[in-house]
Image 1 (cartoon, rainbow, N blue to C red):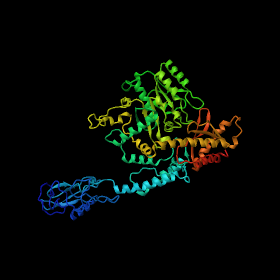
Image 2 (tube, rainbow, N blue to C red):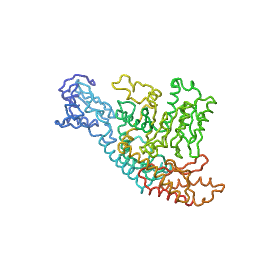
Image 3 (cartoon, one colour):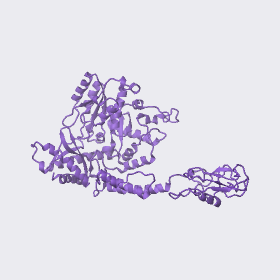
Image 4 (cartoon, rainbow, N blue to C red):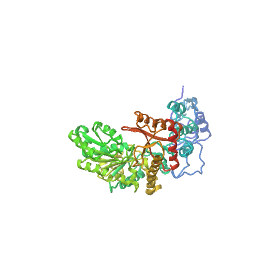
Length: 616
């Protein structure tokens, strides 16, 4: 008859199980199971490894309690090692028979039950796989050291090296073949993963390259990069003081500094994931300020709302109207002059038209630094119109806001202090790194909190032991919110306001230099004299020079920029953007924000355009 294991057997009886289980002294309920030779042999039969015994004199560190040896980590099992299927035999107390207990082949995290002649127990914490981290800290640090070295060498050094390509262009189907993008059930070796890191960097566009002029952002500030890396490492969410105490205080300091540059003595604000969302926030807050009940009752209880913005505004205004249920049909586009600036007289006309159609004008968006031409709307005149019609005055200064740092150029934003809200992207002209976008309010009554707050009690408990005014997360429509203030704060600390001012002034100087050089060269034609750092121009190849009177001149000229862009991309020599605008055919828009750019880089830019377009 098979023996049935039972509890409370004689402690000193010999058996084939580990000490204290079916033989040897039985440890007390809080005593660790001794890991001697017999236990090691028994664990080996189970396919497990016992932890090495720490030296008796090994004291615990500060991270442990004051007594007892510091636990040591067992060596990891070899990859793909299979658990044995044989069981553990132990002596039977009733007839001296041995009972075979199967040890499952399940993952090592499963508790292993051992049966003996007098008891039934689980392995102690010292023996259980869940007692040890599932990640190898030493191997992780080794990987990070190698990955950071790749980052420094391949992305930072080569990414800013004039002898390297701006991009290593591959067609999509070819790039798919080169990159191993498939996600598999089993992990890959460390060296293989590091190679993936190299491949990702190699075939990505180097936006920090001195000859990258394609977007409104470029360059690489080392202090901002350090801030971004710290942010990613700490991996916190900026919604409460308890989880992000440093960054809650830091964000308010940075936002206050930005508000002071606008000309406000007080106010509110928040960092948002991009200028588009900042503009949408402005529209939502403006609606709530005018119709507070709309937060509960929705748009059905509202009159038809009307939004006003220039024809050259950012497309996020249209998107915001659609997203908030206002509707794109209720966005009135105000006319612009030959430089792309909003005409206040037409704004007044459009507002009166909307009123006559039964709409409620509640929101006016002015732009400081339009995306293509870099135009600045006349803020003082626009503010006057908004005041007459009780409309919320928002300024989209995502691109041009950084000119406020320059005493020479801040006049471009005269009147911005009269705005109710401002959007400002330091990740563009200030080179903070994507993304860093501030939504700023002149209101200091808590309007932002009331508009977006939901008072989730699992985050914003009312009985916290500290001042809940520091829990700023309910000012946004987000829950989790990435820390965007550290990179700007650290860069500002390193450069100072004076250093950032020099960065802005240098960008203006480069634009002026390039415009003057274009006037000296045949084939370059400015779309208009630059007011900001957007330099817009056509390149007229030799085959089209002197043929402006031909019927197909503009059609043919419109094909030049795309052809040159394709050639420079495939060559990898540089990058610059192009676009049509209204009745104007494709032209280039060159922007310099990277402080490592020199006159030699801009001379190269002009030479390269000529060389790539000479035979078109």
